Image (tube, rainbow, N blue to C red; front, top):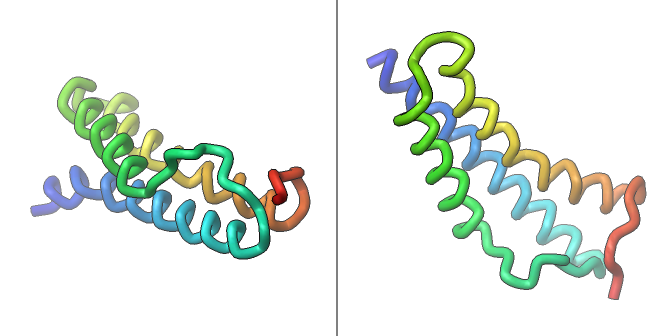
Length: 97
């Protein structure tokens, strides 16, 4: 049971990252910013992250430090939300219509 939880955790982490990215994207769009990727959709982002995490889980050795690779990639999903937040706060310039 514990091993199953450990294998599912990167998927849950990436889901949180994609949802937070989507939430900050919606907030940014409501403030007048423009999405720079014309085909952005959270489902596509989730499919990409889950596909890579699945590939890493199946191909990377099960010993340290390699078993942390799926977790590391899952945390990358939060970079979009961090970027959006910095644009909303005015730290980075964004595309404004």
